[in-house]
Length: 403
Ligand code: FDA
Image (cartoon, rainbow, N blue to C red; front, side):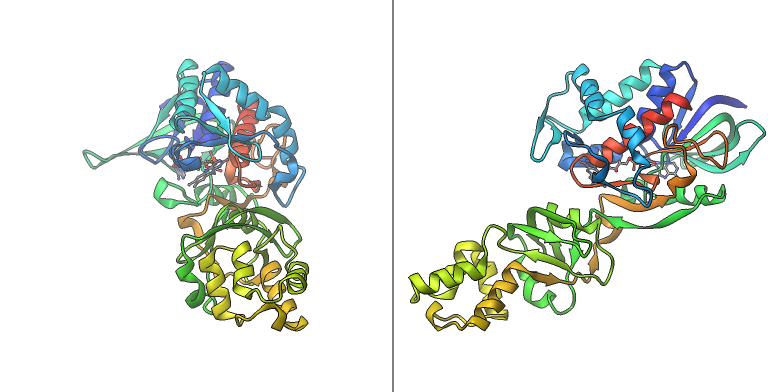
């Protein structure tokens, strides 16, 4: 029977950095993944250029039922530590906006770096391998593995022993990349509480009333400010799609949205519409409403709003009620999403393994000695912009130092 100091389930961002760190301490490490290659989400991330971290990482860029939990790991391995590693490998990168760091070339640079670190310390990654059973022993674990040889379509099994078991299986967003809720089931098997989880950093879909009006605006993008019921606010682009609304501002606010709630969208964040309408009315009352709105909004959007909500007239003909209605619609659009696009397109899973039973310093379970949870499987979710990878690096590194 093979025996390893550490077995890590999941060769994603958190699992790979944990393996390199633990291997550097002289531990024998095996990483298994059921997908056909490691780091599939890394490869797909950031539109193929991996937004690998953010210059402005702060604990309040993360959501968790236990908001203090992430602080120790984020401090122990911060964005500068990861940037130093990227620089050591001479991977070219650039800042895109709001501190978001992307590879100049390809996400593959980041994955290659992680795999090179793993090779250096003789840790091994075995793909097309599934964990089928876990048995806790007096010291360590006995694991039942199943190997899938896709070419020969043969399944072989193996039992392996390890002292520590690290769960780095992420969350179920984008199942086609191998994502599963396996980590949650395993956590529950060992008595851990799992917070309700859902797709997040995800586009909203139209409700039935708005859909027929707005779905043909697909492709229009404009800067907006969106506010969640909690008051959390984001200013960035909104993109109309056939199915609903997307774009960075919408993905960000989806972390703070609950089904049934509305979000408030300011379609003209740099214009106080009521003030400007009144000003135009006094200075140029002959101008048509549509002409004024076209100064602030894409033309196709103005046309649709006019068709649905307003009558086109000269500004001089608008009464104060009508002006308030127009201003409200533009500066305070209360939009009720029909739902979200779900795990099919979500960048992350919000919620997950309760962190109250996990050591914030080592990521070890307080309930089961030798069992560790890292990365997205934990109830820690970052904003859009490199924060989720930074959490994967930081939590993976923390576990790798102690496992
Ligand atoms: P991750 O999901 O990376 O890895 C988990 C691994 O476990 C996978 O390889 C999976 O195959 C494996 N696995 C699952 N179940 C298993 C089982 N039962 N047995 C064996 N293996 C199993 N974040 C960011 O900061 N910047 C960005 O640019 C992006 N971009 C982005 C784009 C897209 C399309 C997505 C879907 C997500 C992002 N993210 C992101 C989010 C980021 O990818 C995510 O938060 C991290 O990859 C999480 O790292 P983990 O290692 O925790 O899980």
